[in-house]
Length: 171
Image (tube, rainbow, N blue to C red; front, side, top):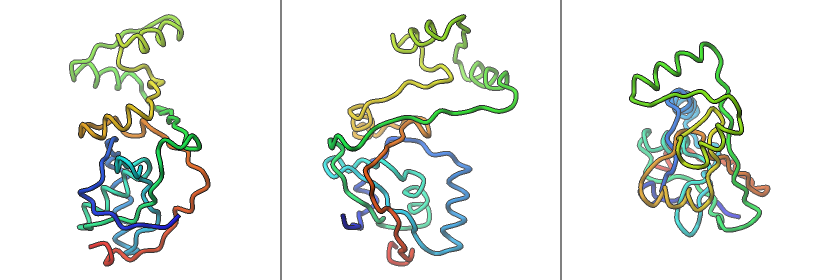
């Protein structure tokens, strides 16, 4: 599979980024003046599957195109999993932030009941977020909407994503 340079405006995102991760990545890219890991993109919809932070960093650094590996998202070898956020510190602060932003927090006695509320679509999240489907990823990207950061975790067949491309080639 060959690396292709794709114009930034042709790519569709589906996840928000984590600002601290983006900042660290931008500092690294500016210091090294290179792009090190290709972005994985669905060839049919131009949806970014892996590399939202790299994409956003390149965009903010003035790149017009990014190195991509194009894959067929319908390939059964491409699996969609999820990340599990682990929260350290005072969890009560999370509740305060949610309530301050107009969300309701309710506590259930059993995980089974919490899962039922989540999957009956009466609740938006428990601390174990709902798993999304490939179809939802594509629909979200096409609508120009974004999932929260790290909603998806794409597990791809053995692809060599590593590149060594000077940023100047992408400007």
